Length: 414
Figure (cartoon, rainbow, N blue to C red):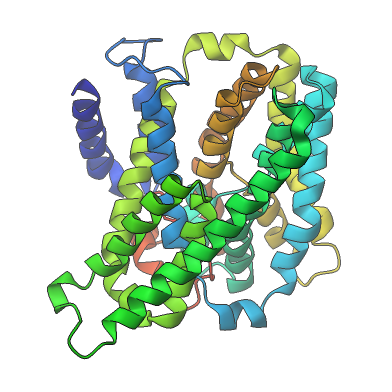
């Protein structure tokens, strides 16, 4: 109950300060992260949470599912087909370069073995511009830049997941049974994809029967029901819930735009609540002991991940494109680590691999540094594009020009 009270207070403070946050370097995401750290065992000791607590894994799991489900509902296949080249460069070249670069610095600076280092690289490869909302949510910012950041982040979570699972299997206690582990992973992904397509299609077909259909005030609950059933089904059958969530959101939007439109306000609010809850719980894990456990080499690896590896990998992938210098630098900088990395990091910790604790510590510190660095720089950088009315960020999310796989906003209205 103490945790619920803390969450309520943090939510109230975030709402009251959201207008200020939209115009300054303050971030609502950072408020929840700092609030969780403040009430944890490392400081006030009001709540007691450990990384292996069921509450941690369930909260992070629900948050990522909700975020990916709403992300999928922002996918526009016609726009994606028309503007795929720049995101394809970022995903096909920039992401592998960041993955390899992170693995190299993790191995040589943090001292982890090669398999675990590659696992860390895969966990930290996904990006999430939820912490760059003043950039990705504004019409003043060039559409091609917003599209690049949104499409990249909307897809790279799913691309990284199979790689993370494969390296967990390779590094774990059952690494000798790699073939059976890979088969299991493939089956989970296939089932997730299948459920993500079949369930929304079946519900849409039911709605079109003459005697069935939701009254207007209950229409927003139809996609919610799909999401709840899908989440439970995936966990009961061990199908991959994250791939299922993103797929279901995309299928629902493609087959029933009216359902997406009815659900969008409710869906965004629920995803924001889940995100904030996950940030609060994750913040509670950021104790002084955790930061003290990371070596000097690990801290150097974290700093390089944020200021060198991501920027360099994306700049290389954008060589020869029509982005100007300013746009390239902004795209290169905004590669924050988000909820996918949190959840994948917890998977690493709970897998029981030999260097899992060391890998998790590095991952957690990197995510925390990234949230602070990126959520506090989006407003100043937005002003370079003459974005002045920053308090209007949420309204821009509904603009038709926003990218196909937009992430949730971070400042005002979140």
